[in-house]
Image 1 (cartoon, rainbow, N blue to C red):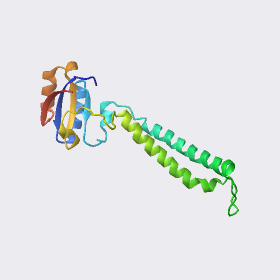
Image 2 (image 1 turned 90 degrees about the vertical axis):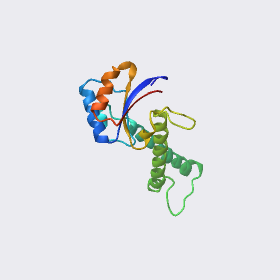
Image 3 (image 1 turned 45 degrees about the horizontal axis):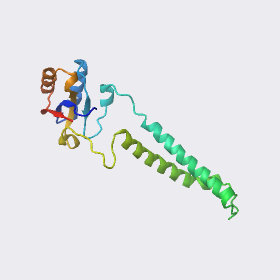
Image 4 (image 1 turned 30 degrees about the vertical axis):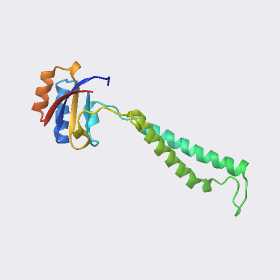
Length: 172
């Protein structure tokens, strides 16, 4: 979203009412800029026509990097750097590597996913994102339209007819 975008939005008190409004907007071919909700709403992505996130692929890649780091690190440590035979265990004992490999897989995947999520969402330390209304992070559901791309009177009548509790306009 570009700076100084004029946004017309409606706030809904219930996610079911908002979901029905999104369906009506799609039927009326209104160009929805975005939908904001305080928590994930199951079934909203297909209605909006959004593709499935590829974040799980990144999680798999981060996990595999953790697995390889652990396995290759322990292989090098126990066979080349510090080869000590204790308790009759061979230098290269794969079953002994499994717990640490599992832990590093989980660690790398979790940290990588958090960092990826923050980067994709434009969040992080020192980043201030514009927001439309305080209620969106609390208990309100929002359908936002870019004023430059829609007929304002048509959108206002749409929002009031679909049960929007509050209709506002804001420049972000």
